[in-house]
Amino acid sequence: MAKSKTIYYCQNCGAQHATWMGKCSQCGEWNTIVEEVVEKNAKKTPWQEDNTKKPVLFNIKDIPETSETRIITHNDELDRVLGGGIVLGSVILLGGEPGIGKSTLLLQVALSLKHLKVLYVSGEESASQIKLRAERIGIETEDCYILTETQTQKIFKQAKSIQPQILIIDSIQTLQSEYVESSPGSVSQIRECTSELIKFAKTTNVPVILVGHITKEGSIAGPKILEHMVDVVLQFEGERNHLYRLLRAQKNRFGSTAELGIYEMQGSGLREVSNPSEVLISPKDTPLSGNAIAATLEGIRPMLIEIQALVSTAVYGTPQRSTTGFDIKRLNMLLAVLEKRAGFQLGSKDVFLNITGGIRVDDPAIDLAVLCAILSSYENEPLPDNCCFAGEIGLSGEVRPVNRIEKRIIEAEKLGYDVIFISKHNKVKTSNFQIRVEMLGTVGDLYRMLF
Image (cartoon, rainbow, N blue to C red):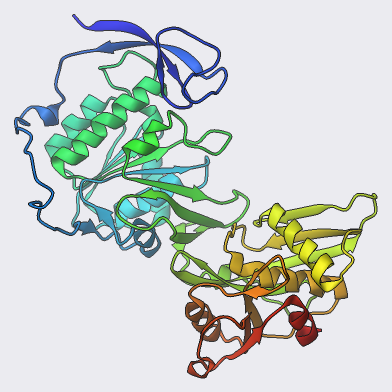
């Protein structure tokens, strides 16, 4: 007979407690502890029956050096974010808001993998709904199998019968294991189901992709330990009212976490955006004040973004400071530099700043473009045509050098810009580029050169 007991779990960190308490002693959060009845059986899952290998002890010097074998998905943006493809035996967690396109992205990947068996398990949609989405995407294949099931043991039986090479679960919050007696989506169910899937992936060397719901705060629903258990955590971002979606890696044991993938949502699915500048820079018929182009980097990927600024007189007494896609504290620092080091009276002005395309940028190299957009709006004069900026602003008003400046210059030259403004402390040979490179030392040099 199965043993059952009552355990109190923290929904935030997954810590166990013997009794209920208002505040979790591990993470310090209030009102996050819930009561769950846990029932465990001694049965084995179908794929574990023949697993009788004993653990082998290795000396670290004796372990051979091997590179991870990866599955190329032919989705260039996803492959870039993952570090070159899906590693065999890895567990990937994809999170994002409802309706952002998680299921569409994974179904596109499942349909585009030719000659590879993919088992797509859905606990949220029926097979007919998935078929309608597949027809809308317009990719035909004979190697994608659909299973609408939420019991993990039944999923493993089907996986044992068809031997898939990739397993997709949509979503982990809908799964339920018979070893735990609690409702789907609870802390214990998510932990148990994820643990079983990780054992399945490591034992069979089949990569598993999990879709995860997120909370209203933007974090993945369930215990925080879920993100520690998996190998890769991907975040699918974007506004539902905008066309563009951003794919970031918050954790990646097999690659960099600084890469960025960009997609455009269309009626036929998600289109890969190979040139991000076409998204982030809007075409203009006439020159407008308050617009500046910055050369930034996302990981090792250079791209140009458009900064928009609006400076107006404060009507209600207290000046407003508002940003979209930029750190508000850094904007206040840049405005203080303009006041102290350049003599601009911005204390009585409203300042609004926007990075087009709906993305958020933390690269300090866009400081120079932010200042130029603010000064352009303040003077109500458009900046010169076909110019861009790459430089960090220090508290003394100096233009500081930025890393990988050659990549930024090459990207600006490739997109047809005539001049790029950088710090004079960047060690770069200007004769190697066809684009004109202007060196700046201080904010005052910038103002005298442009206005």
